[in-house]
Amino acid sequence: TGRDGIQVKSWWSGTNTVSGLTIRDVGLNTTDEAGQRFGISALSSKVDIYNNTILGSGDSGIQYYTQFGPDAATNYSGYGTFSSFPGLIYNNVVARPGLIDSGTVNTGHGITVSSDGSSRTQAAPSIYNNTVIDAEGYGVNIGTYVGTGFIRNNILIDSGSGAYNLGGSVTQNGTNLATGVQSTLFVAPGSDNYHLNSEQAASGSIGTDISATDIEGISRSGTASKGAYEYN
Image (cartoon, rainbow, N blue to C red; front, side):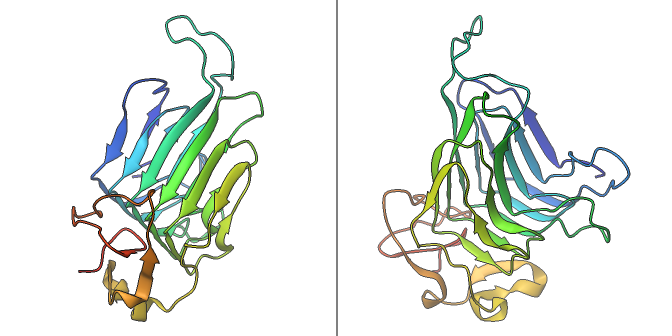
């Protein structure tokens, strides 16, 4: 497609998910709508994004962004007030974000979280067990106006600007894998097969913030694997 693969907007309440999708070669339009070339774009929404595969996008693979409201602590009729937009982003495979076009229209990150101003209800992201490969910009990019959150247990390999850029109140605890040779880590990266070659390649991720299963529904137990795929 020329623009976003999937865009959701103003999911302020309830239980919302974007999951189980394969999105390929989106955001081809470089002449207009430069801000709508994402694989998955969630605008001003409370939503969990998981178990998706995004292979090629004009901008970031996954965007989680608060835009044009709601403003924090403002009472909205029928909704009340909002202090944050918590969202779980996990078990996603993102390859080549921002690299689908030959020109530099914008810089695509693997996963990007931000807001258009300090007054907005801020996203509070938990970003874990994702595999991000060959991002034009950062593997994970966190803007200034972002609430409390974390990134951990991700594989963020060969990102043009670095593995991650942390803003807001988002932290990382050292469990993200940021270096490695793709042909050693993965079964067949040239064919977009990012299953792990060995447990040793990306092991050591364990804790309460690991998904119970991987992108294919395989159970994670013991010393679980980093990234979207559990080695088995």
